[in-house]
Amino acid sequence: MSVVSADVEPLAFVFADDGSVPNNPMPFLVYKRAISVDSDHPEKTIEGLFGANGWGDMWRNGVYDYLHYHATVHEALGVARGHARVRFGGDGGKEFEIAAGDVAILPAGTGHQCLSASSDFSVVGAYPPGPKMHVTRPTPENHRKALKTIPAVKLPKTDPVMGADGPLVRLWKRR
Image (cartoon, rainbow, N blue to C red):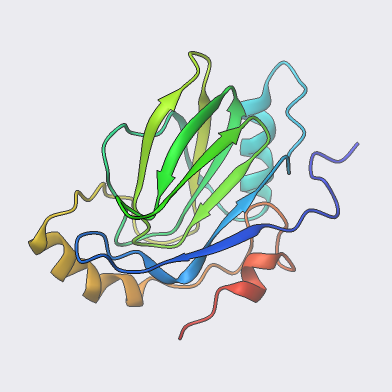
C-alpha cells in the first residue's frame, strides 16, 4: 500500500513581502491528506517518505508559537498526529488548519507561527540538501539580510511528497 495519495495536488499560495517577513515569490504549498498516517508510527512513515525524496535533514516537534522564517533553506512540515492552526506568510498572511496527513512546503523566507494546537500535535520537519536551518525572527536587520540570502537558496531537485516529478518541481521557478 502506498503512503501517498496518488492524485493529490497541492494548494498554492504566494505571500507578498510585508516589510517585516520577506516571504518568497515562489508559492507556499499545502498538500491536504496527502500521506496515510494510519499506523502506530506515523512519524517514521513521514520520515521515510521525505528521506526517499531527498529531504533528509529532519526533526520531530511542533511549530514554534512565535513568528519566524528561514532565510537560507526551504522547509517541509509533515503532520504526523493531531491538528493545529498555523499562520503562514507573516502577520498579514493566511491561517490554515493543518492535520495529520497534511504537508506544508515553505519556500525560504515564508513566515510561520503556530496559533493553537491539539495536545497530540506532532510534526516532522525536513530540508533539502544545503545549508542548515536557522530560525530568523522578523527584525529590520534580519529582513535586509534575508533579501540577499533567499534568492541564493537553491531550488530543490525533488518534491518531498511526490519526488522528482512532483508539483513543487513544476511550480517553483526563479522569477
